[in-house]
Amino acid sequence: MLTNVQTGKCLTIAGGVSTDNNVTALQYNCDTHPSRRWTLTDVTGTGLYQIRNVQTRKCLTIAGGVSTDNNVTALQYNCDNHRSRRWTLTDVTGTGLYQIRNAQTRKCLTIAGGVSTDNNVTALQYNCDTHPSRRWTLRLAG
Image (cartoon, rainbow, N blue to C red):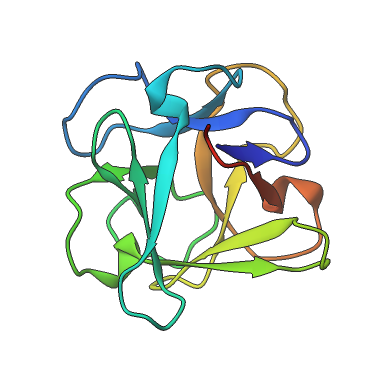
């Protein structure tokens, strides 16, 4: 599970089951639904990860794939070789709190507004800074 440090909610896909492209990524209560589970695969051997949803088998990306603007929505898309489907994970504190940075846009994964603990708040990209909403914990699914 990918859990946002600020909100305590897990990254998932809207509705939890659609295999369509361009379905929004958002936060939701952490539970056992497979849409709250992700596999991280170092596809290049250089620390560039594909983040694939267990339920939908689609990869996490940024809408449009190239914009470096803040607040561009994160969503799922076919897993391919486009750099927007690649992410770096950096343990910024040495304590298991990770920045998840898009390889194409160099922006970090966060939650809209940065503080809401409501379900269904959109995940998006934003400047990588020290705000806790730009930090995630990784928990192995057992």
